[in-house]
Image (cartoon, rainbow, N blue to C red; front, top):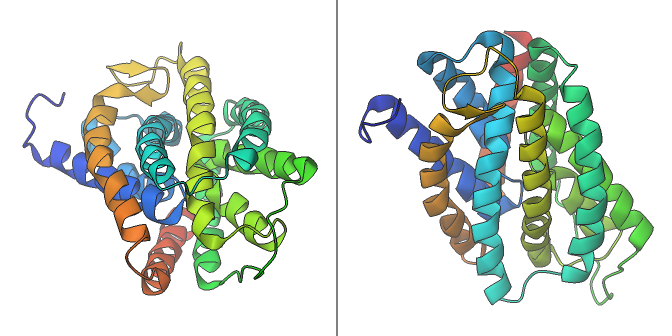
Length: 270
């Protein structure tokens, strides 16, 4: 399908993966929130059936999120920005949450998933306008119950929306656990390695015998489209981590919020 590296569709997928990877590294929100609306336009052009469109998008997103967050985590670890004491409780409960989320995804219609993502985009957009102030001169709190509950909820939401779950984790880290804002995207990236892997496997399993999945797919993970997306993400993830340490993201978040609101209108209303 994608033998021509410079075909218009392949180039669109590479750019989409780059934007998703950059988002993962910069904001700690995975990349699905950027890739989903773009892939909803691109995938029908390459023959993905509308009845499984969003399941294929979400399943493939997790392949890209796995790659981009692995790269981002490696780069953040070299700067010692990851709070590993939080990563493992979050990840353990998140894997359980993924199983719950994928169970319900398997029974959901394409339209329901589309609307769920639309409302998720709206909430994510509103979240961009909210500045969570970290508590100064307080030690981080590594409360297992809070971390476990956060990991599970974020994973359920992530599995149902095809995203990494950082939108749930980051506010809890700042407001309840006194984590420094600078540590939050790196730590959520480390957690999303586990959630993305578990979600990807789940989407493979529930789509394995579905006759509507496109060729070159492993269940709902569309490898044929995932490879050019992954190529873009490989370059986007380090770009995001580089930007994270060098620029203020306030204006970028506001622009991103407007884009997400447009996505909400497109997915839910029009």
